[in-house]
Image 1: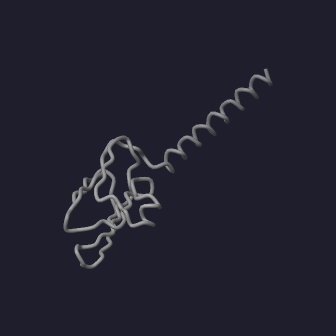
Image 2 (image 1 turned 120 degrees about the vertical axis):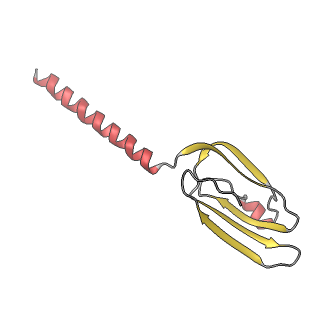
Image 3 (image 1 turned 180 degrees about the vertical axis):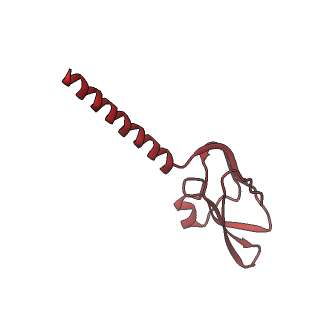
Length: 112
């Protein structure tokens, strides 16, 4: 009987530990939701860099190094919810360089 109580107590503690770990993982892992991010070519500006959150879309290192940043991109699907959108661009032909960062709140639609 004592052995059965020990197994039951161990099983209960193990279950609590596993559930606590799962809850902690849920709070520290960014949520994935179905949404999209895109921008299109504009002949009056040149995109120099962009970051759609820390887990989202951004130029590859070789693109930044060579200055060949895509002037249009789009992603759609079940992707991480971004914390921010950061963009660096230049007004063409010889205009100033601008950079801006927008903190994104969950559940809001941003159209620029």
